[in-house]
Length: 332
Image 1 (cartoon, rainbow, N blue to C red):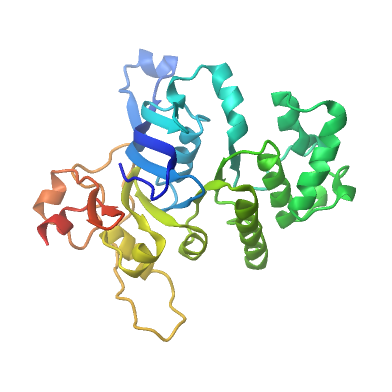
Image 2 (cartoon, rainbow, N blue to C red):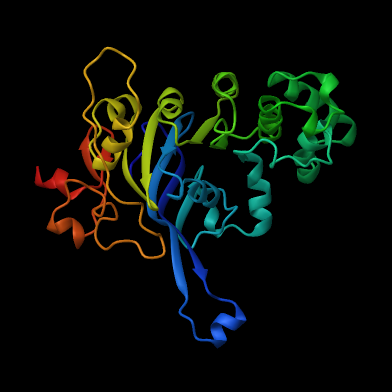
């Protein structure tokens, strides 16, 4: 496992999430084989207290599934999730209910994640009502304080989601996630559905809230520019595996894994610095229903050799606080 540079708040070890398909009655009667979709495949990492760990990769690589499994919104198939010294994979339902005060999520779509029939007061105040941590008379005052801290006004309390812009709706989602004073927040592509100018505002807001409230983020995005701006460390994910992880500046300056190099080389360069060599990938991402043997990336990797096709690489230290899973690095 790749340890965080500060005291770990979250430690994930060999976490896996597999979905079993073809389990309907008719499929079983027709004796169709059960297909296993390994969305997350024995992933290990940690997140330090007060740190922002960025998680990046192509669409469908398992980023959101990993994040929701870490929160136990999806039940893990195997592995352990230790949050502040507590293995939450062993907690019963009531134990998780109490712990959810400290673990929250900001969703990608600021409209679909808000109930269109509820007002801002009801949406942001609902977590407190569920947890029973505030009297009804006090909920309004706490909601007002929270929505003002995310840049909205008390006059907005009676309005409904459709009456707001996309950026304002995402501010409501942020207020709902923070109303319980969590210490760990998953940001699941919180700006991807927003205009570029609004993205900058929301990123700045998340940064200021992190400093003010001492938050720890797991920040998911497919935008390298966003990840590079907000993260202390970056983890790169491919087809359910983390293939490289390290400090942001080091990983962006000198990536080790061929997949990371390909991701970075695809970013347009607008500065006058040295041109980055373009790494061109061939083919499509393999299906998680039938991933390749050996290294999952070898079918697209321009540097693959025989060992890559038969042996699965593991994360190995490459430099201070950085690791990558690639046989090529061992051979060099």
